[in-house]
Image (cartoon, rainbow, N blue to C red):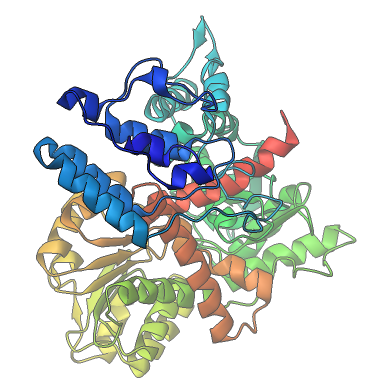
Length: 581
């Protein structure tokens, strides 16, 4: 009887008909589908349980204009659950219905003609229709020795990782980057299987350039090194990425850094492609003349592939303002066009903004926990330009930098490094090849390589800005045991995959390099005279994008997963419009 009362918005239905005495409890709790009105667009093929039929009939009318009060439905559900008290519950519902009238609307609320667009898909929000999902799942992801399909996003990510291993098993760094990223993207493949096909395309760079770099040392001997430049993706705009000089640089590392840089550049929201370059040349043990001759030889070949609005090299590991000046001088010598009206090409100004952005990301993370940087003890690994800029910004916010490190070891100031001590360290490290151990001579409180491991020093935050893979699982265990609450990467791939898992297991905050190293792109977009307010606004925008996506895809607090998904979606949505290129 209640079903007939709420089934149709007609005026007669607003007044309940005369109740008939039920012959049994089953007749009361179930409705025969033969008694339904012919106007029902969806007749039940068999009797449904009464609460489901009430809700189903009330909300599946053709016009859908009648809205039933939630309190009325709640009373109905409780009444139907207690069969013995059904008559009193029906009386309560009838009394409530007299007070809470059912309103019939004649005009709908004005809605936007265009649906709200979402980053995951432009048409249907974060979820795809079953028809679209099924059509892409039926397509083979690989067609090699038989069609290979996937049933879930996790299965798709495993297939992509296996394909990367089949092709480039010798490139360990690249396999690690692909594996960690594809595992984070599996929820996207679940919601839209088409993105798995885009990820397969993205695993292969657009162009990989390797060349010989011949140069003459001070003795007159011809030396040889390998030069690299990988132009990974131009889906969002011209290539842009750093140059790295060091003995650790090889083809696999350059490819891995180029793959990570795709997501980092896309994360900023600017129209930037991804590229990375470098050489296995070590500038630390060379004279100034040797570094200049090498840079000129390197740029002579690289100039064929870079240029304004084509590929923009920036500073990286082992490439500071001096090296960038030598490189740009050679490029200007052999090219007629060496500037661009929109973006400065190969700027030689050493900006501290990238290092300041790293600290601002740490500030945003602490803000979520209702804390600040004031009084926080901070370990800094490395002593390059980024590490010194991080220390400078930490002092500005009242934090206490404790350490610096390089190839010779680490320097530990128990009472903290103030501005005068930071200037002394900067003067030492500005000289090419100078080691940090010289600082001990100018300080009576500094400890050199005491304790043996820098991770044994108690701290609140850790900023690894040094060499690649400097923080592993054992280091994370020591940091967590000593009270460290967060690790904020200030360099490329400082934390290993095992270290990242250990951070998650111990509940330590982690800011990945794909998010924290976006300061260089912010500088190139806004100029070197960037106000601190603008920098804080851009950092807050990027951080909120990453955090919201991590929460939406059930990875709350996992900023690496959130950053990977945001960057991938921006690149993938652009690649979908370009076709098979």
